[in-house]
View 1 (cartoon, helix red, strand yellow):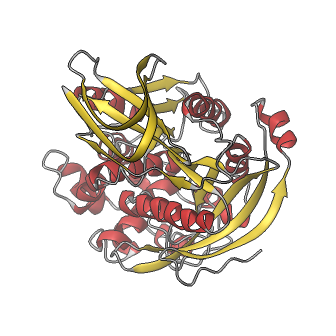
View 2 (tube, one colour):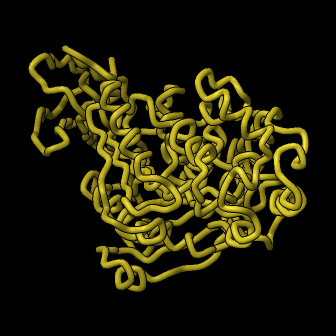
Length: 460
């Protein structure tokens, strides 16, 4: 199936690829999965590191064999890969994760990221801004597709991702908050897993440390990425890497690499940074570890996403034997976010597993958490594809909350522990005193005669 939307702002095309049975995924994961899944390759418009238009691709999944057609949207951000074709839209092994989530009842967006898949040029690895824009622009494209194909986005958004995808998940969650996009992207929950959130702290320590690092290819990937994004990291590979690594590394970052893998790169370069990075470059970086004005420091700081204030529930799943991304990234983030006033943030230990062994327990826990928060399928959605318009303010709120609808509705408000705070029928305008409410996240569920709405509100 090919659906071209020439009039759409984001969607370019959506090509059907294959169908999968839920029974396969249920048996492999032990999760309760109800739906078979259709997989599509989506091409859409987004922006590059210079905020100029560029196309991107991703895998898009739709639940099938169901009388329902309204579901939440979930974003899954994939882990590190060097080969442009080793991405979800090419149905790589990680695409299975998107199928599993969709089999649980989600429209799933898996962006390839810019510079991967069919997107031209080099991928800006662990570049927070373009990880976020690639994700939210894919959701926008998916909504355009859904709206013209008799499906309904129920206005609930869930985000997760693993490894680099954990960083991308966190970056997307933060971007939505920083850019005040909450009314467009109603985040119910975000679950970054095993991600490098503290780049200027923990990742910088890896660069400085004389100890061996299991994945030195990540470090040169960062150098290539930030040179692309900022243009001031180095002039040539020979300036920054010792010979022969200055000639070994460049083909991996040519911008059209479809054959050279990270495992090969790791095997060809030293595991100790002082044997890989020229002492002049490395010493300049180390000697500026207090003021942090060196371009490497500025790039790492610009892409940190551990020290901010999430407004939505957030869980960071990690494992303590992770040899690639230190689990202290999650602990540092939890501590910083809590100090910033976050009301529902937790770093959750999934055991003494290595990076690969942490995938299943972390993502299974994220999936089960999402299932506990999502709204069930609306049986009236087939004839009621529109969402109720509303105006809610302020959000976050303190002692009073106001909400107005364009029709009379039934409204219920729940705390995250399931306590019913308000239950009102035949309501159109409400001024609600909340001085006796506890600080936290609340879920608002609204139904009208032919439409519905779900959102979250926050009491500070």
